[in-house]
Length: 126
Length: 144
Image 1 (cartoon, rainbow over the protein chains, first blue to last red):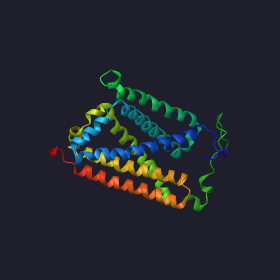
Image 2: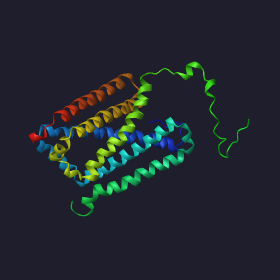
Image 3: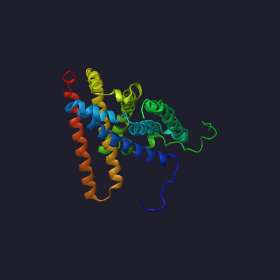
Image 4: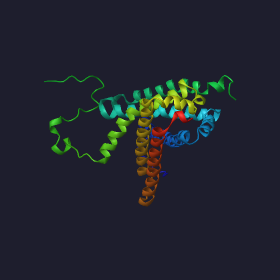
């Protein structure tokens, strides 16, 4: 990375651009892994079950919460991009739109994460 | 005829009238990148529904440890769920692949490295697409 001054100055659009890239890339990497783990089901169902049980441990549950937040952010920010592209007038409300994206990401992501982590929270799982 | 300007509206200039556009401006050439741009928006819209439904079923409605091979067999007993999962596989892979292509074009400067990186990502993606399709089509729940 160069230390030359950039054109953008860290306003909401630039953060959205970077966040969209990072979340999209991470979800894509998970997708590649996920195709491989699901495909085990036709090779050896027992192996599939063993690998799949790993997804239930607390570290992978935390990872799943991250995946949920990335998916939600990428979804809502994608809808924002579509809105701005097809209805250029809404750019006037750019700041509010970014706020709506952030709000929905956490409004759905936090309850979702609590549900995913619940077996850990209520002590069923250590 | 006068137009009333609402307060706060004057900062954004009105777009030039449509008839002022030159002929070539009205019908821009449609190239691959134009279609790739449309594809990202259309597939993205579908993926909001497909991916979030899939995640809700496998992590929110059911706990992840319940999604064992029997769960897969019960779900894939219905061909519509196989179609749903295949649509998700195809669109997510293509949408992701195109996104990664844009990232590579932005950050991998050397032509040789860029060609190599793309070839690798394309090969992995298309192999996994073919393999994933094979799994969804040939899975036999009765054989478990």
